[in-house]
Image (tube, rainbow, N blue to C red):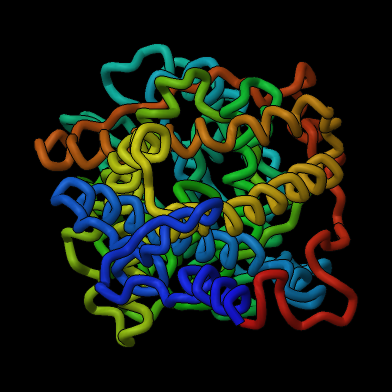
Length: 498
């Protein structure tokens, strides 16, 4: 019995339960037996500092703004391609009606002696039986005055010259002055460098008759997409704006009109007292007032009938032009005519469109902050994921632009090279930064009451060596293009159902 008792006593310590005193210890080869506090083994997060709250909120705000802007822009860009029938409905009639209106064409020019003479010659070749042309020049611009008077001598009885002696000079003042001499029942506006389709007035006349419109907005297309990386993007902006977006605005019964190739009945212009002489976006302002009064605006775009123009010749000129447009939108917003629109939906849409410069400016100021935060600050995972949300609609926009560039090349018989697509992709971010910079500049100028007209110079980059108006470029346009973004039988756009 003794040996068994000895074994039992010797084994005792091995079978004793561990210390119940509540103290913790380490188990060999297993680490600590402690369980961290905070639940589920997670250490609680420290509270955010004021700086972190501000920074993270800014990053989320930027993401939301960029996402909303990108989605709305995508919707507008694809509007015309929602179906084949919708795309065909955006065009001028293939069988125009006989002429029923008299047209007055206003062509203001300031220091445009290099391009304006050819423009007037081209307008004089219109096949419409009843129209007149009024060229407007300043008394302090002898070069342009000489060119337009020579054109008037070449086309006696067709071209009138009106001298603008107002100070300070701007485009709406010049047009209001010429409006007093207009004899047509429809007034059209063209820029000094425009190349105009020889049958345009016949098509526009028919459109007025077919629709009973008060305003017909024709298409405008910049052509020199190979001049620079930013001219490529500027050309595509015009393509989607006149090909699709303006049709959406017209159907929404709120439309900022284009600056040229726009035709308004003389009755409506008399009602509106012409254009607002103090607004830097007189075309947009007129469109807002006419929309608020219930005027019927029709947009028509046929590739062969678009008015061809050039991008600004320098990057600085483009910045000034975009600043002027943005500042004009702010003036229209401040004027408040949009508040007279009859429906809440129209007023909301108007406010959103007119405040776009503010949105771009705010985004432009916050973008550097977000870049710094992503690069140098440890951002929580959830917020980092939110910051990537705008990437999806942005990539969709880029895909649509790539398809649009290909279609532009097919429509206008322009050879689009691989390097053009590369420039389009690489220029996405720089161009967005440029737009933000132009918006910031517009806000600053508006706040300082700097409302002077910054003119865009023209050099004729879009013109071919052949100068005969009936030959210049227009036969290269495809008359009946097949839609790129629509599917046969489809009734929805790529962005979803309207």
